[in-house]
Image (cartoon, rainbow, N blue to C red; front, side, top):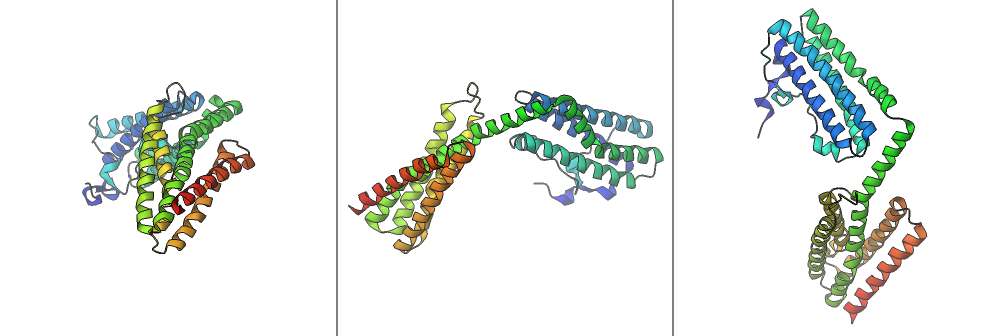
Length: 324
């Protein structure tokens, strides 16, 4: 584990180290932008061109910094990176940002430019050499102007129709990868566990036993749904996205759906726990109807009839079986 006191303070960096840090940072940012471009190329080719253009800008900055370093300190550039400097901004992992969608990627790129501008302003204030100070100031201005550059690149590569098409594609992919499997899991977890949980509840009137049955049913159903979703389609032909993402979405939401009305049975009083569990059930069913209406374009009345009526029937079956 690395602690901050193993890192060098920014105020202790020499001018050569500041230049080396700037060079490595520009190189990293160019790689990040190219990573975004590569990730977006298949589904969002126009946005990919924007990030390729931004990566080229970072390459230009890096070359100017290398030329300055060569003229002042020679060809040997010290190895110093962001993680070597205490308090220096760190980039989020590319894989994490990529999974957040195209709008989040664009927002992350804007944040990167703001952080880089702040670094160059701070670095310029630490240097005494006029040429170095000028270049760092120019790069700060360039980073501040990158938003304008990005807008110019978007205007060149992204027409209104292209942007609307990409946004529609992003929404569709979000629904296919996350909403559909998650909704299926929530429905399965909420509805399929109703009968066993309430059957045990009314048969034993033992809240702890009911909770254990509900926990086992929820976790078991979550694992089963997660593996089933992941194994059913690799996403290559259907375009539904990563089977791992879909499996997690389905499995987690299945477990959540079941635990919602199992957790109240941690309360010792049977009727209090049951009353709360019933309220939770109706909240779950209404949430399912709302998601179907918002993301699946299912008319709200139809969604309500399908989910609430079906859930009520399963709930009634569990109560009748447990009371028999």
